[in-house]
Image (cartoon, rainbow, N blue to C red; front, side, top):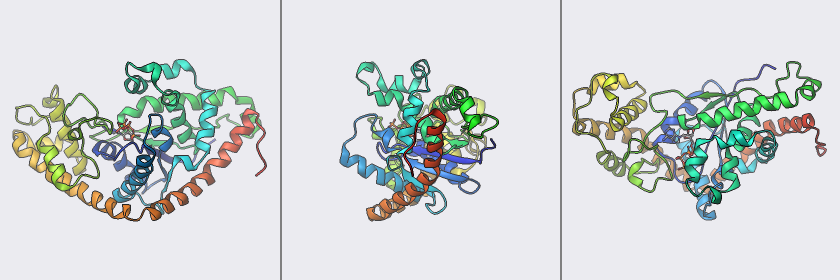
Length: 347
Ligand code: AQP
């Protein structure tokens, strides 16, 4: 089957979005809107794989939606919704729980990192998270998935699940009219640009993350201008001047990170940043970076705050998006049920 090009991606409402989410994923989401049919989800079912305060979760779902729109996602053009409103995600995830192998999930590094030493006490949901992510994507037969570098392994698993489903049910899939036996596509990761893995501002060896205890480690999309400037001023660096060539960033994780952030915000490459700032000290580079950050993120924070003043309108956007998402996912889920031998309820 020739699959229509379709984009799917999502973010967890586990706190406010940060610069890593923005540069690693959202900038590409915004770009892809111009050329593709796009489906962007607030993945609230993923968020509850670790305990969330119910009131804060509700607020975070709206906040992430507001950040999507404020950053430039157009709810008329793209489909914006929260995952739990479209039950096809959870239903298909169960099917994939029965397709994916324990050995595959045992290799997932994110589970190991998040569960840490207390693995026995982690939720089953956290372990099965990649199967739900595969369902998120394949419920729409999405072909392209723009994500940060940390999601690469989960995307590979989604491809394995698609392949195994196509193999396990090959006869039934052909009988359903798919002559080439391809029921699900192999979704392609879209991991491009100078900031596919933005690192913590306090430790260049750790990913910038919502769950990092120190707020100084990340720039939130909700931070005001002064806070952004302060966090960049306090960002960890070494004492050397910036190099003029990319090779000079080797072994200088913090410098590499700040140069990558600058390049991504400026829409350029690290080499361009170094040809401008090579030989200059951080005392000169950091104020330029802070100005750029404030000029790019300040208006997003401002617009998100304005949108949050009208939660009913945000909820309306989510309901509209969910209706449109259901229109795509439910027929595909219905076919999945036919192919695997379930009897569906009459529509
Ligand atoms: N530091 C990062 N650099 C580049 N991309 C990143 N992404 C996340 N952190 C970085 C990308 O943002 C998208 C949404 O991520 P998510 O919210 O679903 O979950 P996450 O990857 O687990 O993000 P966090 O901030 O680290 O959340 P917590 O702390 O709750 O686990 C994805 O495309 C991701 O690659």
